[in-house]
Image 1 (spheres, rainbow, N blue to C red):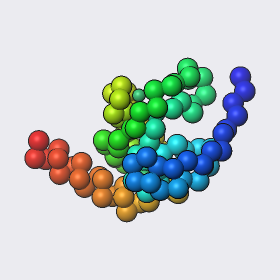
Image 2 (image 1 turned 90 degrees about the horizontal axis):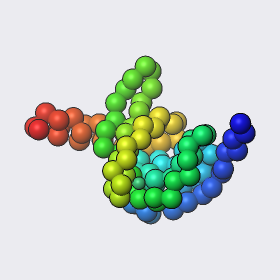
Image 3 (image 1 turned 180 degrees about the horizontal axis):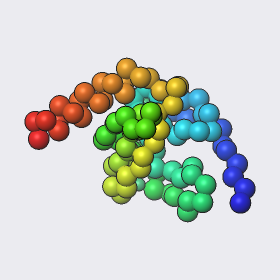
Image 4 (image 1 turned 45 degrees about the horizontal axis):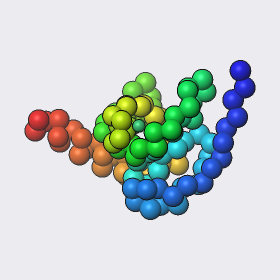
Length: 104
Ligand SMILES: [Zn+2]
Ligand SMILES: [Zn+2]
């Protein structure tokens, strides 16, 4: 099975940030929002195109992971945080989410 990484630049539909495609990520490094497109090998073509909100972020096995939820179809995806991502935003999100968890 062959898998070609696409390097596509895109404009974040959530914050308007110009995202430089690395071929490894399809989420915005500034606000961590993503779009519902399949970039994983073996996945069926996904044409949903909905915006995916970061709904959870946690540290696991030495890596930060963000969980995205599609605002259109509700599908959830896990994505590793990459060094390109704004880590301040990761921490901010984590605090915000944990605040919500504590307060219910
Ligand atoms: Zn953004
Ligand atoms: Zn979707």
